[in-house]
Picture 1 (cartoon, helix red, strand yellow):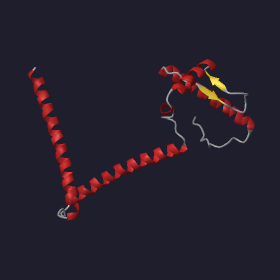
Picture 2 (cartoon, one colour):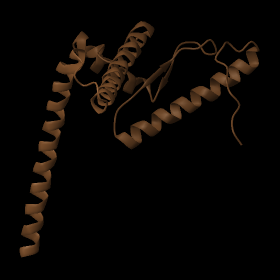
Picture 3 (cartoon, helix red, strand yellow):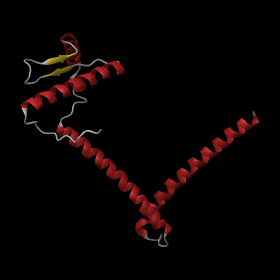
Length: 162
């Protein structure tokens, strides 16, 4: 049986919110425990909530202090290297989308050049320089493929002689 889709918004009923918090917290701590066991790493969790005085720590206060001291001993650049806020996340997503768009533009341009090259109007001056570049790329790939074929054939000849 599948789960229903959860809308991420504040749960209005306080008793339901408390139960959901407890279940999600327990699930998070279970996953964190599994991660430390399976990957052999050290981790901790500090959880502040309205339901308890002071923070809850996992696995224990001594381990949390050791890890926090270890983190604070690192230079600031290393401490914050993988930290990301909403703005950083959006910038990274935009950057990744721009890279993907650029690859798609290059691919579509190559397809367009292929269509132009297969038609009769290759003499069009607008495309001659790009077609020469495309031809160079194709020639280099053909050369690499021929070298691979030669290497495989010479390797096969060595095997046949044995």
